[in-house]
Image 1 (cartoon, rainbow, N blue to C red):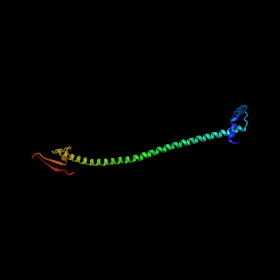
Image 2 (cartoon, one colour):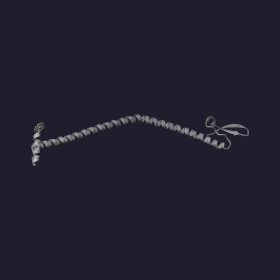
Image 3 (cartoon, rainbow, N blue to C red):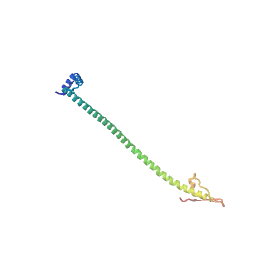
Image 4 (cartoon, helix red, strand yellow):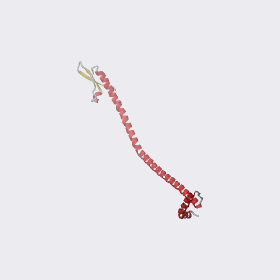
Amino acid sequence: MNNTQILKILKNSIVTNIETETSLVKCGSLQKHALLNQIKGITEKIKSLELILEYFEFLLYCQKLKLKVRQKIQSCRNKLIINKGLIKQRIIQKRKKNKTGTEEQKISKKWNKLILRNKKKESNGQPQIKQEQPALNAYKIRRDDQQNQCSFFIIQA
């Protein structure tokens, strides 16, 4: 007998088998019937096939998730490659700003030293150098109060 014949027999006799099984259970003595054994075997196979199908569906779902994750990772990598150049440019620009900033800081430190020197000397009666006029700040003013004359000389930095 092939499977299709067994299924036809099952379809035709399922009602009578259920009735006989319930009557046998009610009587208390369950006898082994060949058709009932076939039904049980087929239902167990169907259940195992259903479990296998569920497992394959789960694997398929996992594969779809993996594909989505891989696509997301690839898009992130592409964005990273694009942004990597921009990030490098920004870092280079910041370094250039920092280099120019340090040069400006060095220059401002020199000017601050000069101003502090002149402030110290101002307490001795010499005038203070104004910060607004950098061209004049390159010269030191010496004043002779007795003669009302001013003389200039270059400050060595």
